[in-house]
Length: 543
Image (cartoon, rainbow, N blue to C red; front, side, top):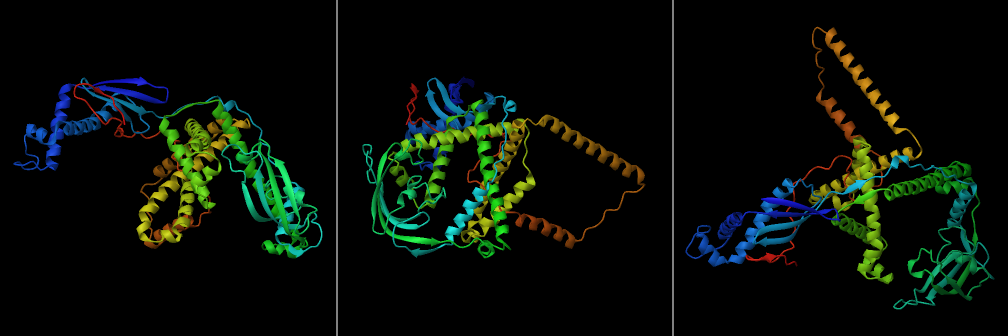
């Protein structure tokens, strides 16, 4: 067998294998014997018919196809091993020829990541601050949710609750775009509401324009959306909104006192509520800034890195992102096809323009983080991983659909996914924490050396202590017996710790940790591309 490889630009390699003609004939006979055992040939017991009889009865083409399949399954892993290729997935049959006998496969390689000098990257971490205005706005929102509404005569003013029927029409729709993008629907708004969550629809400041309207009043509001609007289909579009007022009500806000604080928990005073709200706002700001900082940091590292991966990596990640979008939409009671239609796109356009770029970005980030974890020897905390998995699985097992024994197989699969997700999360968080310290200019090498020295010192101390014990004792110390009760108690304590571990969210993305060198797997059977073969000529026809 002669094996040759040819490099490609897409992180794949062409594997060319030439074999001796005699080997083809051997596999034809093996295939014929195998088929004869499954076929009733008149006058012969199963598997006992002569080779020539089998060929006449079953047909040369059928036997040759079976022989080729058996031959490929035999030579492919041997050729992979001889070429010293580490495939990242199944290969693809590219070409099969029987005259001369040769095979060509396209084999995907493992990703190749060359990092830039990420240790030279510097970024300041500026912790955000919570202002009194932030707290006041939050409390005002709480006030509004507990306010009572009374009918009001006259014009709507700032702070009034207005019930309206709203519709919107695009004045300059594109070809094929539906002009009536917002069918008439009832809604309610507070005039002059400063809550960003309530003040940006259908555009920022819309509710301010309701001031001065009365019951049964009507108003037309025109607005041109900027190019950076979050509503993609409305970028640069001029829309005319029609407002019909159904009623106007005055809001009576509750007093901000100790009684008000009791509505939100066991708070002794309004001051205690305000303090708790301040803490929650700060926590939220810290998390938001931390996520933005991490994203910016990893983007800069990806930008300076050279990342190569075979096509199937992007295909799988694209499929994953698409499934995630579909799942998120289903929680909003919307299906993927309807959503894509609302964007005036075909599914193929949506995947190419929206899904694939997102998948590629996620894939690049994941590969870079895995590479850094490998180089910096970032490890997983086994105890933290076990606690997180135990906590998540305990919640899942309590769901009604998983309380039946017939779902054990499904639970086992979910457990594997949860474990991979949790491992990825923990590992990536550890890498981010390390990168954050690097960006701050910390000398992580010095710390690593210090930690290593401390570890060696502890080992030496332990070794000396053990030697003294051995030298000082004439007899070996008797081993203390542990009663079964104590052993059971220890186990119960351990199990209890797993069950009472704090609840944490786990991302849905299934991805395995690559902090360690990937385990080498046997070469998988290559997928078929060829459906025809020719005994006398090269058969490269494809489906």
